[in-house]
Length: 290
View: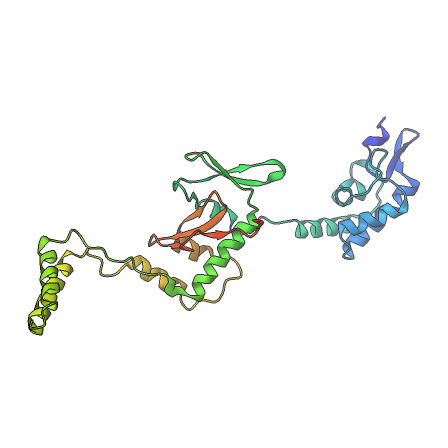
């Protein structure tokens, strides 16, 4: 014989058989109808609390989780030889509605996780879940544990940064060309230019000639960076775009190299041309308290 506490709400044992509980059973059809009419689980739980009928001997206070268990239990439509308290069609409608309302995985979070990098040592970060599923990020190289950082805050911050670049794609700049080691002649020519400029009688053409000669030496010593194709690609990718309502995974994958997370919980995007945005200090995640 089944014990009372193992039976779903709405049933009890009478003469060795599972039968409908007179008081509890009347509530079951209303629960399904209320849910299909748009009431939330918590609204239904509050209403059930007012009836004075507890969910069980050990649970005097109704919660939305108790209501959810009722809506998802097929025994209420006659399964496993339980007396039906609602029809099959109503049960299936409620179940479909529950599935539609069920929280869906946060878009793009799996993509973003692959790019998470320690801003201090540039090692890949790994997820380290804390209590109550709080999300931390751990750098095994630096032995840092950063967080907790809610997934939504991470996504929102990155989306905000991408939209800032869509608004102003000229932020992407070709890396500044650097001089290789300048020959001694450049230093000597510079000294001669300064010496002549200090002489009132110096010929301007002679000074101009030396300036051109020095420029020629400097040009020949420049690193061979005439343009940066990665920067050009970034400018093209982010130009003439509408503001994003959610992260564009193709744009993200084609433009971002790493997401830099600092111990201070700031976020920066490192792009394919090695440029980092925001350039200084990063952007404080939204949840961080001042």
